[in-house]
Image (cartoon, rainbow over all chains, first blue to last red):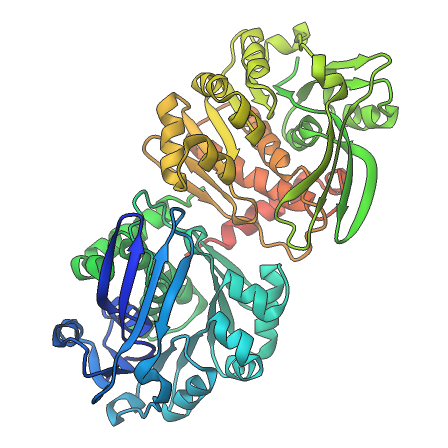
Amino acid sequence: MVDVVIIGSVALDSIQTPFGKVRDVLGGSATYASFAASFFCKPGIVAVVGDDFPQEGLTLLEKRGISLAGLKREKDAKTFRWEGYYEYDMNEAKTLRTELNVWESFKPVLPDEYRNARYLFLGNIDPELQMDIITQIKSPKFIAADTMNFWIEHKRERLKDMIRKVDLLLLNDAEARELFETPNLFRAARSALGLGARAVIIKKGEHGALLFTKSTHFNAPGYPLENVVDPTGCGDCFGGGLIGYLAKTDEPSEANIRRAMIYGSAIASYNAEGFGLEMLKKISVADIEKRFNEFRIMREF
Amino acid sequence: MVDVVIIGSVALDSIQTPFGKVRDVLGGSATYASFAASFFCKPGIVAVVGDDFPQEGLTLLEKRGISLAGLKREKDAKTFRWEGYYEYDMNEAKTLRTELNVWESFKPVLPDEYRNARYLFLGNIDPELQMDIITQIKSPKFIAADTMNFWIEHKRERLKDMIRKVDLLLLNDAEARELFETPNLFRAARSALGLGARAVIIKKGEHGALLFTKSTHFNAPGYPLENVVDPTGCGDCFGGGLIGYLAKTDEPSEANIRRAMIYGSAIASYNAEGFGLEMLKKISVADIEKRFNEFRIMREF
């Protein structure tokens, strides 16, 4: 039995930033999100890797208490790979190469032990796969979904269908503007709520994140980082930490969603201070609580 | 006797946005800043206009209780004029034309009734003029100064000298990055504090503003606006509201600076909802208090 089902990529990333470079390190949205969620509850990953995926990566995730029952290992096939770099301002990942490999033909089937999970996090995969996963969960209590520009451009209508099915839509500011065809984030959020999502979170990188519901608005700040080393996975850490905290409370009220955003931001802020999973491997729940409290202090007035 | 001395432009603006256009309307940084400050205390403007400046503009400012004793009226000369437009995303003013006119030769001399003011707001004028004004105030309790890219590019060393003399430096994120040659706002703020400013505020438009002191950090959110009509003067409203509130409390503690930032943001948010001074003329202190309270609610967790 897992608390949260997380679908997304488990990948090998090659990253270059002004502060160094790494080659074929463990990455992917489901990896970051489940690692972040594992500080609060037991996540289970739905993904696929090839037989080139290193055993030490799997061991690392299992040691964190993350279930890999939904992780398919494909023979004679290659793992999803991403290669990218960040320029001096570190605000935007520039993609050099994306190899879908095993993901091209992946048709996820949830293991029985996942089907009773009450919390579901749909990483930014094909909206048709996202909808298929929703139908495989028996009685979901809270569904959060991320998306990305590729699906906005290629499967806009299916994406909108998916949004109708979820409790919480997460997307970044550029995606929100593109999907709802307005530069105004408030209006973009209203459009998403109009489709049927109960809540929308717009992620703004270093500027924090905004939560909108039909009648309320919450502004989560960014954590002021002096040393950003590698922002890869920060958005996934935010989402994973958020769903993990909600699953722990088992009460997805707005008050808890607000706190969950701060926990997600705290984990994401640590993540940016090292390459790949380097920082997530080091930090403890006490470290996360420390930054959660700093967030309170830095916004008191 | 005035509470705050505000130096900056009193101008005639021509503005075009996707929502309309206006020609030769009352504008300028000192106009917006003093109007915003006037909700809390008695400001006095230091500026110069030509004999083409409409009497109704002066009457409007005087009726707000703003002293014009420091406003020089130059004969046979033209008022400062700015013409600009905003594109669809409304984030950045594009300048079409700047006519300095009377400002080219302006050497401000403070009237006696200004010299005992305890609060000083230096708009984004030549840093040498900013320093000259500082010496004309007998015993300043709190000096805030704004700047702009032109001075960063043309008078960097004099600007740094000026920063050494002030309690609070205000600048926007792009200016902070340019002046301190780093994309990281935290580091830019540290550099400003290193020069001797007691506090630094980095304005980020719709993303709010950040306050840094040697040991603390405060994150002021942006107000979520659905209808941005004309952002001209919002930064000046923020600064003017801030210094006006501090003068009212007469205690420039960090707690009060934090509250002052929220008041400044509240006034700026109204200002963006109409052209020129249209909204500032309409709102009351009760309206400002209403948004101040909304700011509290939208960041509780």
